[in-house]
Length: 451
Image 1 (cartoon, rainbow, N blue to C red):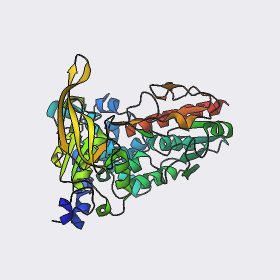
Image 2: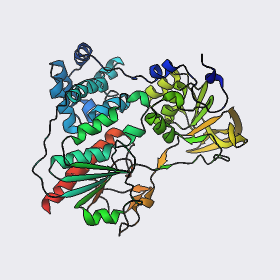
Image 3: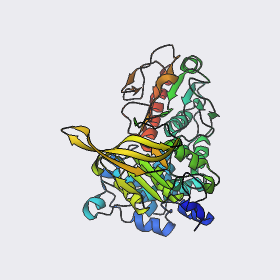
Image 4: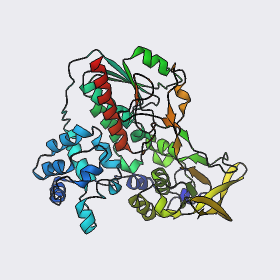
């Protein structure tokens, strides 16, 4: 066993070289042809299927599964892409266990749903591997649309707009397109550079120009886009990370979980990534699970998730919680951070307070617990940073700190639509962002067609 595993502090090289590849291999290996046929045969092909109603993009799930069962994975992929052009990534990262599979008739009756997500991946992988393109651009309209952000919402909007013949320019702040699909998903959920392969597949329709390293509010203003384009779609996601509000959280070793995940996703050598020996993650969502599990897979000896409420309140699904436990992560509930303890400016421990419900309000009990830690990850949610919208020439309306939109994705500004994590009412799911981008694109197309 490598000596690095027992090294104190934050260090790389904690595991043997071959362990990294094994630890970060595909979480759900793809179904082969025979497995897909067997699994598809379990579907009852329900009329008014509850799985379809639970899908934010309303994919005709019984139809695409029947197409697989009859040996037509290409037709199945088209059924999926008709509603969700990012169906390949959604098949990998969607919490299907709390969406389509949770309401599957077989889940309700037997406790074992049809593996809808893995079947969706099977069909979309076949189509993408053969580069089957199902859509062609309509005759060019001469209309131009600016899309801010190349994440799921922006890509879905761009593809649908390009299909209608509009010219789309995507302005992306990061060096690569993909948004959270590229930078925010656990590495074992999206292997073999799939996020970039999907970007290439989506943009192959033509008429989509992606400009990287272009940040709203820094390199251009919203007013510039409104003036220079016929329509604008805002899909920039969330840029801020919520603070722990604990004393000493600026100590060396306190890190944003989203930054850790992004760094890991872009790393060419996992052994070079430093991780603590004893890691504490604060939060109860998918990001907390991803950061905790990946810390363990990088060789951390002890990893503990601390969440301020009970297990039933965690945003992370039961499957994700079980995944963490299976990888040796300890999840502790009813704890909130109070103080980061540092020695020589570096984290050495974290002091937490037990919590309890006081009526309908969460309150600290006054009892304290100290956990030894050399690394603390903040995973208590992200926030929208509206400052980038300044300079629009008009005030864009916000609600609860995010952009307010109507049912079609229209903002309070003429010519401007929005979707994805940056809008009020979103649920921070890739599949929901895709639906919002797609639907906003249809609204933009209707508006441009009338103009």
